Length: 511
Image 1 (cartoon, rainbow, N blue to C red):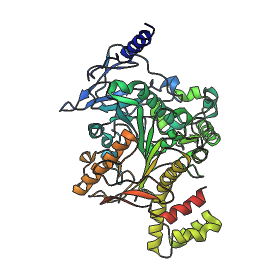
Image 2: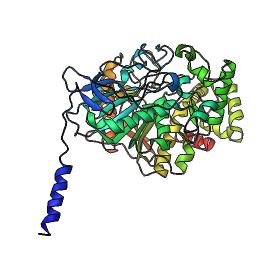
Image 3: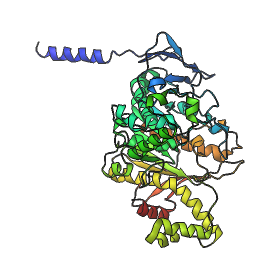
Image 4: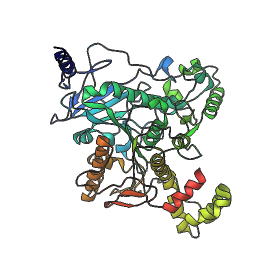
């Protein structure tokens, strides 16, 4: 009899644990913690789409320049079938190589912008598909989760639950001020846009299972400011446990100069000077100024390295205190397309002496400037590697100070058609997200092969932390002793690390 009791107890516990009822995902009614939402489907009904799902309360009125607050619950079913408002920003207009497919919708733009979009092919809440959360670029002043080339349908068809998010931008997302720091529970200010991203990831953790996703298998991914954001989330103690993998495309902050960032003291001083110039005496007064008027206020607003939300990146990795996750990192051959014309030979050499002092001679060996052509090439390479060095360093630091594996890529496929800016900054993500069909260019079979390979690498990585898979060229794990990349060009192939001498020199001058 005594032997039977433990057996019966085990059987009872098993029955309880296995009794979780599978819920079929009904696009007309999905339960989130705040209430029911409905979505829509693709024509073939394979993909369920939910657009404009709130992940935080509208950051308006007294909530302007405060950490994101919980969503107020609602009654009934909330229809999530149209794109949400994008964050306040200058009217999105195509420029240079960035055509309309790269732009946020022209309207609506609003402070009430904390929404996300979900694409899923899951039929039940027990499928536990890998989740990819895409963080948009735009220099922290523009962009949106509903940029056309971020459409998640194709990625969801390849086996992930795909999520895009909005976050506050510019003065609304990154203004710091002593009064704001004093009123904050964290005793810091700025970084509201990053706190929004963390709030979105918390929403994913709490709700994505209802859409068929696995909250314990989340990959964060982004390009440009989105890649900077991924970098911030990887070092932020406030994001710990919210994701298991990271994809970073052209952006990071590993150098001595903070690039798009500044210290809390400097950011607070900038905010104080701004309010004094505006003759504003309190934050309360600033909070009642219309959003359109604030949008016109000039100033520098970006990442704040406050050691609370965001610690120094290199220092955090060197101490092994980053969120230790597997990584895909890389950059484009023409990432510096927007940085203007080259200097003259004399200007280039004078800049070298001014910036690098006793290392100027070595600098001019790896970035030669003996002819106008050499200056042009060296300047172009410098602007490329201002992105590339950070992504290369990220792979190197993760490899030496973490357990998650790193994979490095180099994108050099030039999109066909005009204007021709080479493999420009942002050119790669339509290949990675399998959205070339939404971009008006005369793509060829080569492009579609690169797209298929690149998006498959990304999906494989989201599934199991390794981009490799059947039918794909082998992508070697990053090894600093023999550094290799996957080269995404007219061919997809493993290749030695490009510009190794230049990158090693940049190691010397940056740390």
